[in-house]
Length: 277
Image (cartoon, rainbow, N blue to C red; front, side):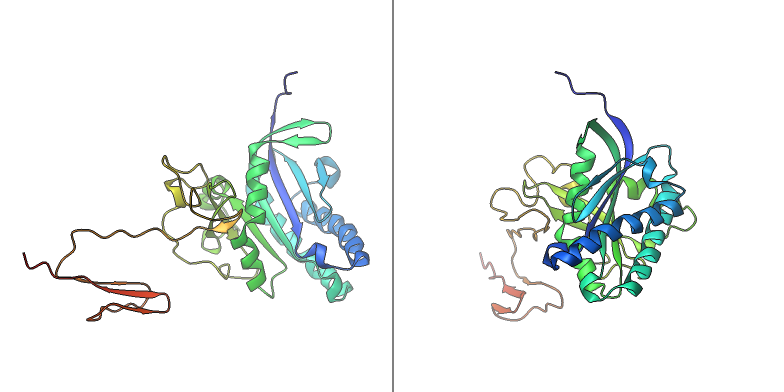
């Protein structure tokens, strides 16, 4: 039996922080309140929750937004609406019922067969929302109510377009490796912060040489011997030295060359032997 034709959607995934660690009565309240928070935020973007197919995920929601929706308005107003709704929620409940969200946005094809939805865009978004760097940002942004992560393609087409109300400087890249050894990059922003805490301001080129795509031929970070799990930060590159003479090499932030081999913390100092031949 052939799969039905896919349709294009804007895809929103929301996950409640530390949901499983809450008491059961708190989980029930958070689950119920999440729908009110989402409905308010979608209304800010000119959408009705009833018009957007949604899947209940217990500790979150997966929402398919019609592709004709303005992506700039969706990104801008969704995060503003969520932030405002979460602030109102915070005023009604104690710490056990505190709601903070990891929110992801992607765009792509989805195959819908009744309640079963499949598609690479959904899988990629789930990895972004669950990535360790994204969780770390929310953990470090203690006064924030949510963190937003978008795919590399959405960042390129929407954030970098120079549209009103969307500040490219507020987004920083988060690189990680999936459990299958695939390099991925998402772009993270935190409402109320000039830049998301816990991420380097200049991480360099995307891992694997292709942002958000498959690793380059020959394997990327997290491949054989990498030892990385799903959502793991990208491991550092392996350094190889050859044909170096009459030189000292210092590796690491703040490293200084010294006259003998020495290791101090995470900074490695190597005194290369002199070739007298």
